[in-house]
Image: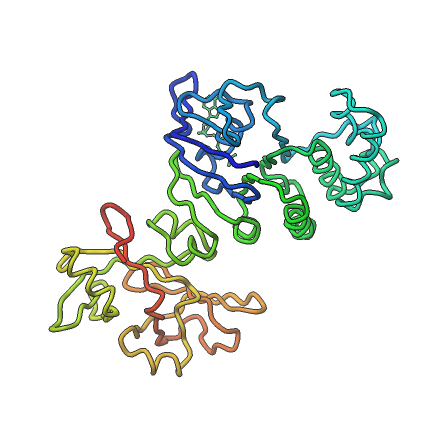
Length: 371
Ligand code: ATP
C-alpha cells in the first residue's frame, strides 16, 4: 500500500522563513494528487520534504504506516521526476534507465526485464540504443520517467515534469502520464502551474497559498465550489468575475445592488436565506460568476429577468470555438465567454444575464464563501 499521511507538516528555512505551515493531507493508495498555487507558495518545498531532500521542521510524514521523517531519501521507496530531467549524455537510453538498478546491484537479467518492461509502457523500445542527444524532448522526458518506473517505487513525485516541453508535446505527455498512472496503479504527487494538467490528471487537487493549504478537492468540486476568493480566482481561465454588491431586502426577496447605478440581481431563494441568516443584509459582499455563466443570447436573457444587466463592450476576442467579451459592470472588470455567433462588438451597448444557479457569494472581509 502506498498511502501517505502528512500531519501538521511545516517547513521553516534557516533564515526563519516559513515556507509551509501545518500541511495536513491523507493520500490514498493509487491517488493522483496535484499541488497547485502561485510561485513561491511552497509546492516544491512540500514535495522535497516528502522525498526526503528537505528536512521537515515539524509534523509527521508517514508512508504506509511507517513514520519516515528521519528515513534517508534512498530508503523511502519514492521516485522523483523533475522538470530538468538530466540524463547521462554518454549513456544509451537503456543504460540511463538501468543505471539506478546497477547501483543497487540488481541482477543483470532482472535489470533487462525491468528496463524492457518500462520501455514497452513508455513506447521507448525502438530507442534503447540511442544516446539522449538523438532524442526529442518528449522522448527524453519519457526516458526520465522510465528511470523512475524501473525502480517500481511506492510513490512517484513529479515536479513540473512537462514544463520544458512545447505545447503540443505537453498535451501528448499529459495523456501519457494519465495512461501510466492507470497502468502502474501508482500513487503520484504532481506539482504544476498548468491548470489543464491539474484539472485533467488529478484525482484531487491541493491549492496552496503562502505555505497554507486553501482547499483539497476533486477537480470538479474545486471548480464548482471554491471555498474562498483565492481558490475561486486561481482555478479557471479567464478567471471568475468578482463584483462588489450590497445586500438589500425587498419584501420577500433579497437583492444584490451593484454600484451606484440601479442594477440589481435577485438572489435565488437558498442563497437569499444564507445571506439573511448570516447577517449580511445591508453589508457589502463579493459576487463571483464565471465567464461561461454570463450569457448574451436573447433567449437566455428573456428567461432570466432577475439577473439582467446592461453594459458596453470594451473588447472582443475570437478564439475560434468561443469568444471572450470584456466589459465592466459598475467599475468591475468582467469577462464573458460566449458563442462565436455573438453579434456584440466593441462599443456596443448590450444586455446580458447571469446564470444564477452558478452564482458564488463571498464575505468581503474574510474572503470565505458564504453560499
Ligand atoms: P514555484 O512554483 O515558483 O516553483 P513553489 O510553490 O514550488 O514555487 P517553493 O520552491 O516551495 O515554492 O518555495 C517556497 C518559498 O520558500 C519561496 O518563497 C522560496 O523563496 C522560499 N525558499 C525556498 N528555499 C529556501 C531556502 N533554502 N531558504 C529560504 N527560503 C527558501
